[in-house]
Length: 264
Ligand code: PEP
Ligand code: MN
Image 1 (tube, rainbow, N blue to C red):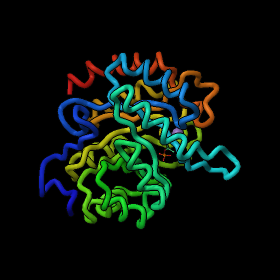
Image 2: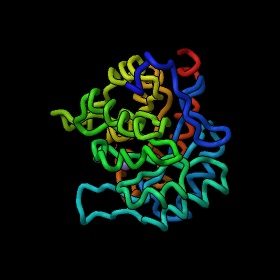
Image 3: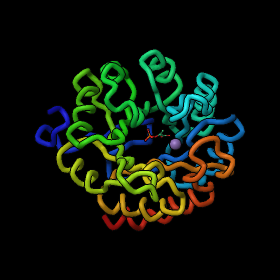
Image 4: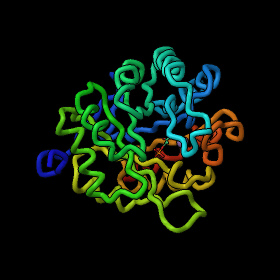
């Protein structure tokens, strides 16, 4: 397989001139679930810029469970992200839900996220193989590691070598946490593929108070970084409010990860 460690040891994915994923330094990508306004994103960027957090996340196209829930700002959200990445010199990651949006998303963001619900949208994966931007591929809600790796192969085999895998929790019987964070998968994926692997403890836990310790565990078991949701006023977040850290907590968490990263 193109992703196999038999072929090469590691892939380093470049988000911008000075932000990479898969090298010695861990990456932290942070930001709200959804881009809600320019003011919101500016507040986020100003705070994160003071920390070791290197990249910003925020959804403009949102895969909401209910069709009646807010679906994202769309192009307006992309334009906000584009302004933020230029003004704050921080790369941005945002989701692309369909092939028809690839072009415009690629023109406004530094990394394109494939959400869990689209992990096996093979037409989308094939099309992303022809894009000249890194892809953040999130594990499907109930995907085996074999299915996850083959999804990455769809992108790699169509010409895009810059794929980062993201463990974001898998569905199980317990409803206390939103999903079950599968750190065993992180260890295994690091062994069987040369792709960078990052962890999203936010969508795994679903509760902000569980996130700091899960983030530390992810780094301790060899993850190349984290993607975490935070919001200027978590309780006002239009989506995933229960799992959003405050900006203060986010910056504190980034600080507390340094000794863990240094120890691995
Ligand atoms: C998200 O990152 O906001 C998201 C919807 O994640 P997932 O696809 O992992 O549910
Ligand atoms: Mn979310």
